[in-house]
Image (cartoon, rainbow, N blue to C red):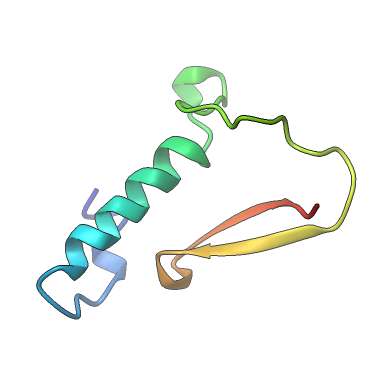
Length: 72
């Protein structure tokens, strides 16, 4: 957790590490494919990903991590 998340973030306040860890856990469980699960997500998304459309990037952890998905 520290190497993947906290080593790349400057802590700004007392509550900031909790916020960063919360966001990292959400990304880890809902957006990051896991090899042990055959590249599936531990918490599946409610709707399947779109096959066509423009790809958009969403910054996570202040831009340290990026998620990509098709726009609506």
